Length: 329
Image: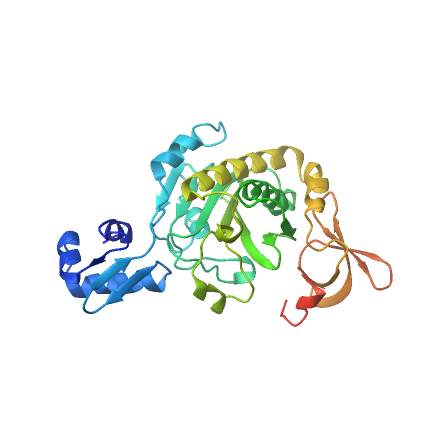
């Protein structure tokens, strides 16, 4: 039974006996308890007591597919019929990458409430609580060469930061090449996958994960500090509204990048650069060197002034603040 339907049968801030909830849902008590256990493990705020049953402590802000479809109708770049909102999936990027070549791929959007095997860069796991974050992917056909995709994550990151800034206020920073930060915490991350379709254009899938309201245990399973949008929000958050705004902004950013490249975004990106003027470590082909962050060039490569005063441009690799030198690249 989908978890969404189960939660909709639970009264808010009131205890309901297991027998009553089982009757409402049509589940036997053992199966019901297994579902509730999974929801609690995935970060849904549910209380469980042998004598009192179950209690849902907070309103669950479900993502509304119908409302999203209405929002996407405003964009000539997207077809609302290619949007799906799933209760659970292995990975939104993987789902779109595996979409049949004979089917309509361009402009397809996959949004999910939970990823069983969410991915980040370099094969790292993306962790997020169920019904409390934003996880989505957008598919795009790319008729240019693979090299011209370079810098896309930066333009997407800038577009995402502008949307999130309307909900968080000032202070967001961009971490090359794919993270949106606030203070020392990661707020959002981008993952771009590219494959070549047989005898056709490139298939580009842009994945986005935003920490909206993660549970407190998340930092125990990730290797960096995270921050939730809810902690810094300047207004009440609607995940449906925010998801729609992000999809629209990402589609515009991809379309603009296809036509103009990264150069028009260079100045604005550098104004949000987390590393600029700070001591960083960079890793290129296994070689690590120290220097001062100097922003990105017009092609999206990160520039560093090394200890000899020479400029180095990083196009593939990793850049981190010197303070985080004890963490592995």
